Image: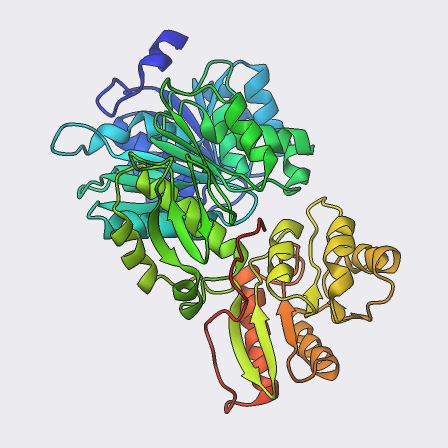
Amino acid sequence: MTSDRLAGLTSWNADWKGLRVAVLGLSVTGFAVADTLAELGADVLVVTERADEEYERLLPVIGARLWTGTLETVPDELADFAPEVVVASPGFSPRHPLITWANDCGIALWGDIELAWRVRDKVVRPDGSPADWILVTGTNGKTTTTRLTATMLVAGGLRAAPVGNIGTPVLDAVRDPAGFDALVVELSSHQLWYLGRRATPSPLSPHAAVCLNLADDHLEWHGSFEDYRNAKAHVYDNTRVACVYNKADPATRRMVEDADVVEGARAIGFDLGVPGPSDLGVVDGILVDRAFLEDRRTSALELTTVAELAERGLAAPHIAANILAAAALARSLDVAPAAIRAALRDFRLDPHRIEVVARHDGITWVDDSKATNPHAAASSLAAYPGAVWVVGGLLKGVDISELVATRGTTAKAAIVIGAERTAVVAAFSRHAPAVPVFQVDADETEGVMAQVVELAAGVARDGDVVLLAPAAASFDQFASYADRGTRFAAAVRERIGTGAEDEHDDAAEGPTGRDS
């Protein structure tokens, strides 16, 4: 296979027949890759440690082969197959033996996003063009912003869908016979690494892109913060219209400044302060757009108000920032301010994202189990200062000390859970010695949250908030962050009884015009 032929595979209608492709991994993404390639006529070998029974049954039906077993070394079956392209699921890190082998052999190495872009013209719009892509990444807020953007686009009359790391593979969307005007693609740093690691640039060229923020995360996968940052920065590669960045996070501005974009693409800033002429921001409690209007030097367009967001549980500072980022992306596709306002009237946050699960005896119990890293937990603590903080889990190679030093000192108490409790307790001892710290010594999943709630109830008083914002992954003791949050809410309700008020709004104060 020559590089020229691979370079020409940028359409569903290109000649994919007989292309030998190894697909690494058989999750929902891996199956979508295999299914797409088989439909295109490629020769597909799926390689995975273990296979879901349903996928194992379906692979021969679609015309793909399967190999399962240990992947500590390159299987003979894979080497003998001599793939011309390897498409890896995002879980395969840069140092995985199979990825190292593919690189050493000079085999083209793609992720599912690369493949999806190359075949995005399977279903086109009436004018013959495929759907526009809007890319969303960041250490935190990706899913909320992706959902917000798609909701705004739909309110503006476009056929749009949130896809990618949010749960629906992009390949499923590009093959949907109904077709779309726009796809809002949530991208993890893992997916972006596969886009950016190529010797030659990826053909992907989004309409607009945003990196919401940058902080330590997934260092065990990338190997260093620099590599993590560099992966995230690829979100802006080849952007055609709008590079949206966070004015409150200089790292995202530098990404835009360094990006190789299509001539004419604009840099659009957002934060909770007064916006400049190419920004979105907040003026006297009003969220405004000063970027996408003709007279942007002297005028602004009203999008919504902080008061309206507060009524819907959307006024926490980090959520308001996500709304501004999503609005910038939607405005880049000419969605009217009135449509953005209408979209926000019915929008609800995902479960386990600053979700008030109960109020009882003056105590508010908040589930932010989705705060799986220090940056996300910092936003939660900013929204609920002085909370009884439930923290801990798998730290993913990240040092929690800075978070404890900057936000933990204001906590009323800390209740530490998880397999890496020692590191968390040590951080409090060094940086917040005045904060009472309680450890949950239950190692079995069933007992963890009951003990958390018992300890929290012994500390919290009228007017207090008990905040589950672990700043860590959940897989040491729980099936997922959702499982962790669900068990927390169940333990709260078990303790206080079914008569407690059950809320789903957000009691945090909204933005005040300052950066957050």
